[in-house]
Image 1 (tube, protein in one colour):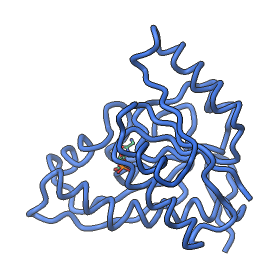
Image 2 (spheres, helix red, strand yellow):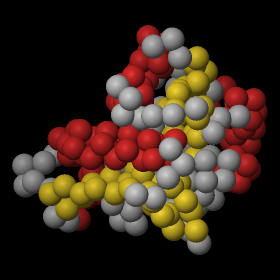
Image 3 (cartoon, helix red, strand yellow):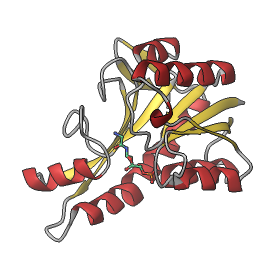
Length: 208
Ligand code: GAR
């Protein structure tokens, strides 16, 4: 059984999908042992607590510098020593030390089709605003392993949807979550828990 730690910052809908998928056995061979939030008042924390999952809040505001914050995060992760870390709407970039220590053990869900609309400043609603401003006709989401560069690690799964002329950033965010993120995140986590994802030369290969 793989021990999973989920990192969150916000509403926690992706976390909820992971919890439900484990209960429904759509994710096999995995369990969530810990949820770490970057915000003390994140709704995601309430979701975890309701399920009796251990939670920690590590807020950047409580640390003098990013280094100290990252060190505390590193200590907490190392102590838990999970098999898999899922960034489910976690809005900070993890330090190189953390990423190297947990190489190919951290996955992130990003709300666009990487390599479009990603990198610095591209998170949450900003992504959907940029998508609509550019006028692209398709968008989607990506689950990828995390490496030292933001949103550049090996891609595991992607799925696209059509952008509608009636979309606002908020509507598009909801549609991308419901129609794409929730589906590909649980699928990717299940594949990893079943040891079906290999990384070779910065690309992933999925056993079928
Ligand atoms: C999701 O749309 C996720 O893709 C995005 O934050 C949202 C969190 O929603 N993540 C990023 O933008 C990371 N770059 P949730 O808290 O309801 O799961």
